[in-house]
Amino acid sequence: MAAPLTVDGVDGCDGEPGLILTDSSGGEEKRPQFGTRFLTDPRQVFQHNAWDNVEWTDEQEAAAKKKVSENNHPLPPEKQEEYDSRANEYWNEFYTIHENRFFKDRHWLFTEFPELAPQCSVNHESHPEDHRDQKLCTEFAALSHSDEEFPGSSATYRILEVGCGVGNTVFPILKTNNDPGLFVYCCDFSSTAVELVKTNPEYDPERCFAFVHDLSDVGANYPVPDGSLDVIVLIFVLSALHPNKMQESISRLARLLKPGGVMLLRDYGRYDMAQLRFKKGRCLSENFYVRGDGTRVYFFTQDELNELFTEAGLEKVQNLVDRRLQVNRGKQLTMYRVWIQCKYRKPLVQSSETTEDKKPARLDAQLQLN
Image (cartoon, one colour):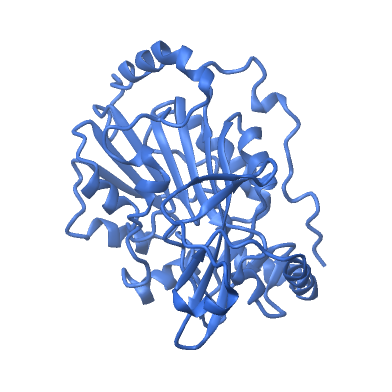
């Protein structure tokens, strides 16, 4: 269920990263991932296909807010219910039409998320105090060989991608990471997408297990026990869920992580070009829209995502906004993209207060349906 990136006829891109990203606390510059092309002279904007770390002016942000406000007229409840109940049908239609031609392989993932590369540790970018717990990390890794039989039970490093689509994340991982202890799980809401993964010549059942799963169905079982995964990856997938279902879905995924395991996310940010291109009649609720093909998308803020992850009992390692100016030199068009990239870690020692003890955070508190 990796989100399609076309909106009203405009082709998008989930982004070969290459920006200096800004942290949620204050907006200061952080380390460059691998892009340092900065637009210092606006007259040169069409000299390249993309520019990194593009800051918006106050006027641009005000115009974006005005545009979103103008189109913030939700569809009738019965129409919204139709899109919700037929979500599986719309995703299967999407993959039946596009098969594996829609997305490019996401090789940029290894720069942004070293946890997916060979011989890495889930605590690669952990908090400084975690070094004191290195012994605990080693002990948890030793316990990863479980007596319980399940796909990949003998593996020592397990990655799950949720919303795998046709495998544009999974297959680069399998090709790049030759760790003999690696096992990769991948699931999607669409049975058509999962079948395309399984029939791909690069699919190796000795190293990978693909299965159909509805992320929003928190009662559905996963093929792995709780506390067994090192990494969970969500790339442009959480935004496809109804906002009411996001918190429970993330909390359920967090239970699958080992202590010290990480959840990695990259998704749409508020006022991304895709959001601004939606026309009237496409709004389902505040910042939540339906595309022309029936699939849905939400546009996040950093604070919203931070709340979702922390309410699930995870600790922030990274929460960055990724801004880029993409250019169509042939048509002389400029397109401002906004994505959010997150890493959240399961504590090595769980707090005595569980997420069930907390008052649930409701990302949808301000959603008002007509």
